[in-house]
Length: 102
Image (cartoon, rainbow, N blue to C red; front, side, top):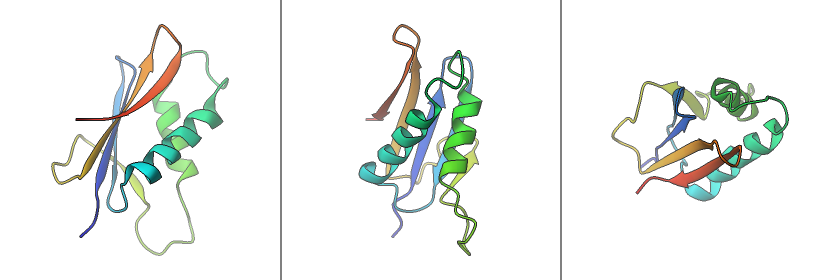
């Protein structure tokens, strides 16, 4: 059985969903989200959610894999995921905050 996950990236104005079809465990996904956040620090003057999502997808793409990419854009929560993550821009601290949905 696959451990699916959906990540919701939002800054209050823009929202994007990214789906992972397997291995969506917090120790994997949160580490990969945080890596993209760290790599993007100082690149934009505001949240730029679309840019963060693009960077996240690019950093986690492996062209040598014969299967589908680990992550792909989705239209919302799939309903079959084991984990849901929220990556939200905190306007007062000017930082991205990563949490698991309850």
